Amino acid sequence: MKLLKKRKTLLWTRSIMSFLLGVLFMMPVFLIIMNSFKPNKEILASFISLPKSLYIDNFVEALKIMNFNIVFRNTILVTVFTVLLTCVVSFLCAYGLTHIKKKFSDKIYLLFVLGQIIPFHTVMISVAVLAAKTHLNNSLLGLVIFNSGFFTAFGVMTYVGFLKSVPRELEESAALDGCGPARTMIQIIFPLLKSTTVTLAVLFFLWTWNDYLLPSILIGEEKLRTITVNLYVFKSATNAQWNLLIAGLTVSMLPVILVYIVAQKFITSGLTAGAIKS
Amino acid sequence: MSDLLHKKNQKFYYLLIVPAFGLYMFALIIPLALGTIPSSFQKWSLLEQDKTFIGFDNYIKLFSDATFLHSLVFTIVLALFTILGTNIISFFVALLLDNKVYGKSITRSFFFIPNIISGVIVAFVWSFIFTGAIPTIADKLGMIWLAELSWFGSGGTAAFTVILVSIWQATGFLMILYIAGLQTIPKDVVEAAQLDGCTGFRKVRLIYIPLLMPTFTINLFVSIAGAFKAFDIPLALTGGGPFKSTQTVALNIYNDAFKTYQTGYASAKSVILLLIVAVIAIIQLRVTRKREVQY
Picture 1 (cartoon, each protein chain N blue to C red):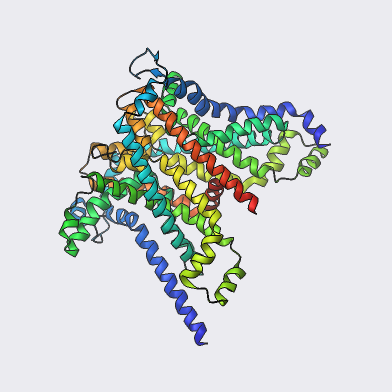
Picture 2 (picture 1 turned 120 degrees about the horizontal axis):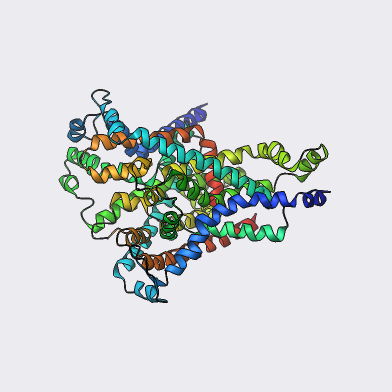
């Protein structure tokens, strides 16, 4: 009985200790969120004191000055279409690759694997030149196309990995029942890969939403900016308005954190799979 | 049966490959093969139309370019500190959270969330910590030197901020990998060791560390490859300054390409960066594959 009690105390100590460590680790984020509810004067007076009242003018003004309605719309459009396009073409390609002559599919697959090694920074100059030549600069469509192009390598590799474990008998019996190849692919096989698709969708969401480099290279027009570029430009242009930038940071972090909370399981499994494969 | 079925629909299956392959070639392979690599042998500025073939001159110039060499050294220093810092912290956090703990998933999220926030935003969050929170706290504690320290004023302190923030962002990811690794260690091995009186730090050193070797190798290479691509955090935190002291290779290429428009020269630097990352990735693939054999 005594031992059991001692164990329970140990468990509680350990739990509280690790929780507090976690809170300490997240402190920078908490401090930003906390300060976004304080007027500028109060922020400058003390960065670490709790807000005296819930002051929301920062958000109202930040949303207006930084054109957050347009910026959010741009970011959401680019992210949604990138996720959709990349998932669809990656699945189709992986399905095709697992159904054609091995000699040929191995070669294509190897080319996709090699692409994983290329850091974006080493092609950014040529991408900027190519985008200008094809009039894909200053366009949200351009962002979607280039993002999808970069992400397909990872998408195809992941889908191929999972498609290999799907038994062929399933497709054969579907064919015997009179199911055409397209219908077999869409109605029989695709639903089996639901969790792979969700994992990939979440990763593509994060990569697109958080990206700074590609939109900063391709987009010059103010009304086409995405979130991170917009914040970067705002910070460089106005170094003094802390309260607005802090509110902007809070607003920009929240969607990502929300997606994380909803899709926690898939994000962690996707990231571990990605690390081990790539 | 299966072969027959597949032969009948071969055309359909080949067609499926086209969209992804086309996008991939357009976005990555063509820019690399027809853009970056040929340009690296040219004297070319983005502002001019004419390009002249100059062979390896850009590459030769690289080796006497003090700014580039410094960026390479800084990238290696950043890599070393980040690799050590992230691995040590995430390993101990993983050990703590691998135990039975209440509120485990919330606590894990606290460590992991920095990893999913954009590098630019992470850097801005921390620039407030360095210029706002730390001086306030130091002031309250009466540590005047700390309150008055200009974090972004000297090369040493600026490098420290980049390293600290990079560690903060990368820790959560490695923690997940360590937790995944810890879960593969059989419980009876650990229990047997405990019965033999092997506890505490001895248990970590004699049981966990040897059994986690595969995870260590993966984490090591993940962090090395990541460090050589470091861009967002130094750009948004220090801008590479003061006096280019915190400029990474990726940032150096970016500045050459889009600030001073030395397109050909920046392409040569890109090829060097690609070679470095490729060598790391190839080693990683080999190590990972060796690990697969062990199972």
